[in-house]
Image 1 (cartoon, rainbow, N blue to C red):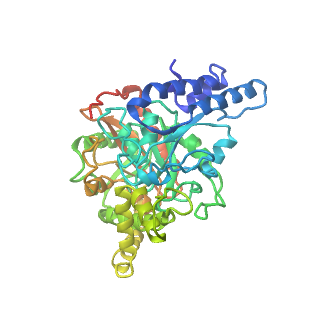
Image 2: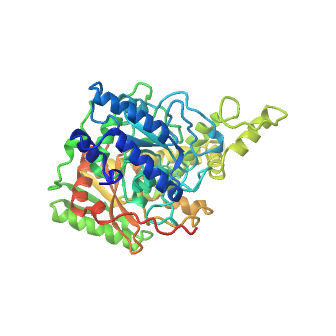
Image 3: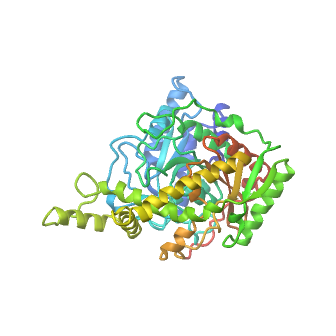
Length: 492
Ligand code: GLN
């Protein structure tokens, strides 16, 4: 048995039956990282030595009867924009290359309470801006299904690490698709929770009104388990919602009889790859066979979502990234004549091209002369997008669309064309604009063997509905049993 092939719920089962130990689990992952990281490049920082020590400590306590718990000794990988106290948190930026987080994010505190084990910090686009992980200051992560392809982004490190069995599961963050799109490109499951369900405390802010932390896992059951761990009110995040705790595994019923699924025709029109379309149409047929009611409808406002997203996200980013000034923390150019030059040199050298592009765009749309024309207008359209979704959810329980218009593209094919990179986000951004939950699961592969993702969108705080619909399709298609990453390529 290869331990690293198992899901977390399978690991839990084997731990309970004393078939494996916590030490064995962590050692298996450390070996796997040793073997695969040189091809995949998913980590910015590995914590395997510390992890093995901790696993031994935990194992001894378990044997002494001092420690128990469902998640005790379960390892995890963390995107490098989530703070772990005493560990480097770089956001894949030169600006934070040497930044050691002085505190834990709330989600990390929760893992600590469960005695879980961090395997490392995972690669991403700089400050989570991008869709391919090519904008990392440190390295380009490769897609385990074909090493010449991008893993998607910005959570490309977490998705590639899960797909290549270097971690059993991981946390990513999603501002405009950064959990769902890389999950789709790497053939794993990615869930972006409702805005406010998971605390953002300790997540380095990109666009605060859109950012959410969420699970990247091998299957839907693990997604529900990880959501159980991270969801919940936090007084340190004023946008987090105070509501009763749920057990998201309870909703996994493998039954969609009577479920109303809306299919917006705009997401199956021009610009969506034929094989992606074909694959999604098959899932729609499967849902119908399983008793779901499918209806096509129009979500016309969606055509404005991308422009709205890029105005709002850049505006908030320009404000959030103002804190990196070379004074308090982060990169500082040591040679400066005055304060202005210190700011200028530190920010010019500390940030990469894409981040600077967004700061400039964001500053422009917030400037007094253009505020009404761009930022205010975008906020008005945002409200319209929300209303349009509200209307749709009067008729449907779930909305089904592709996660991405294409499968994973070649490394280097879009990184010099920002507009093309932005256009690839067309299927994911509306969910963030409207604050809704969305999940991506793999539903097939194209002729080249690259995974295709299906996205299910639910109404606010209706994670259970999309998790069950995703679980039911997963049980039907058995993607993990039928397809595996090949690690082919690697010439680029
Ligand atoms: N690709 C999108 C962007 O570049 C989404 C990023 C994200 O969700 N963090 O902004």
